[in-house]
Image (cartoon, rainbow over all chains, first blue to last red; front, side, top):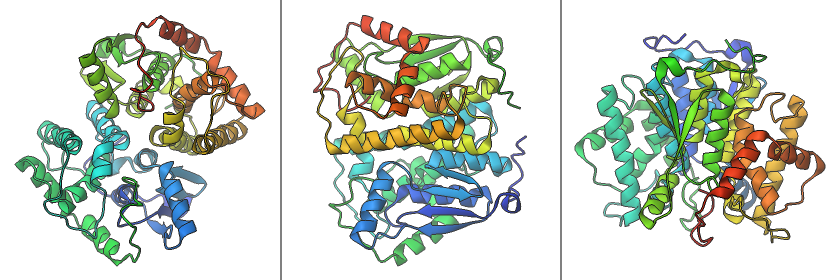
Length: 235
Length: 235
């Protein structure tokens, strides 16, 4: 059973082999960031393999993989699991004490609902404000569809923070929903989006996490820059 | 613990109240079909509420809700859960014996992976061959992107059927992955898509399920017909 006050999960490394997470770009790939955060928070030791996109063929492969949501992918012993939600559920089973899912059933249902909404929705936000950790674009034009998506994202954040006491979306532990919305926090920073004070404070807390700083620092070391015209929304 | 040989889950009705599933169109909404199948297979008693799309405002609301993946939605006592994957996880917790997730951990990870791939990918297939249970369109033109998605879907089917012995994707029980791909089976029927024999037989088994026949019969009773130009891919 879950013991939500235990911070560190026991790694399952010896039983099931070393875990390897395959990601694409740290700079552009929101999905890679989500998967990596979940692995970090699970406590499972893991290595990262990056699909290079430095030549045209590899890039095409990367884009094709991303379009069918096969990045990130986790290899762990005999288990192969891909897609952020599937990886999260797998890690939550392996490390039930890590807090990746809230211990309360109704909260867990809500966490999965808003995470699914981020997975499948917000197409306008994703296309209009692509993740780009290299960039800073103040005064970026936000058309109405983007504004509607921002309104829904911040409505979710305010509801969750009010309902579960913060500082994270479902209370004291960082969970799946925080990982799902972390790339949105980077977008709101990159495009300098005006937010209500509650949402802004949440965004700032996520951006200040040591894991986020580490990821962003590594993203800035990546040499590849993709033409913005090639980035068809988020990948 | 899961007892995969027990067919019928005990309904949690008395503890947590009557479940209500909100769907949109039976004829056009693949997501509604997926949620409804999962409820049926869970054994939980439930009622269906349909968001009418017979006037412009309701239709716009429906489309907006669908775009953020808030249909289907399940209300169950104090729990509100939306999106097919979140509903599936909730039902699998309530009815662990219903087989919505495979009992083996590696199979469960694979089931969630291919289900997530269906949730987030196959955009070309979804846009090119929209669900329309009223229609039958033999010799429908399939452009190359649609063919690539069909090839990946049937690759998943063949791998799962070979790896788990059939007759369903993960063995003898109908599970989340079967629900996720059920609307694809209707597409392959509507547009009379040529399939390899293994995939065709699987498609036919799904289409022959009593639940599928019931859903399709009800879909044909729905009065609303949406202009195809209005249907922006799948909703």
